[in-house]
Image (cartoon, rainbow, N blue to C red; front, side, top):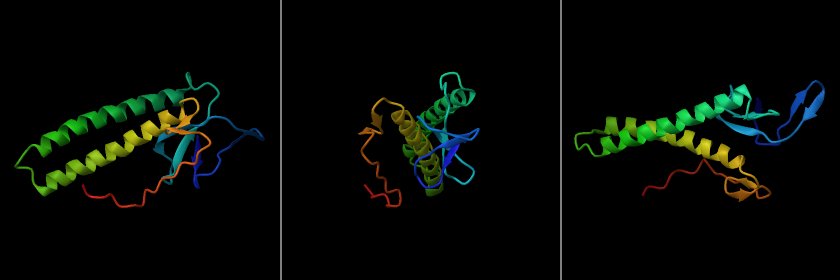
Length: 133
């Protein structure tokens, strides 16, 4: 696995040579909270790739269950601010996971990166506050 600290090009040194190629964005983070990538010659049969597939499935299943639970909380007129905040926090965590799954899967589509051509830069400003609706 390769950790991306600065968002720059990633390479892995292996036995004195530099190995480049397609890297798979994993849906978990490295030890310092940085993005984690998988580099493998045979992604289909790689143990870590299969683990990543299983984790992606678990993350999307959890998001579906949390969405259902959040809707129930929202429809409950007795739900107080504490319960609503708890539900919103869990749904926010699940949304972050599912967005990372979508980004990872989009990276694996031929010729695309998150809906953009591979030569277009991806710009994200995650520091902007969310606008109220």
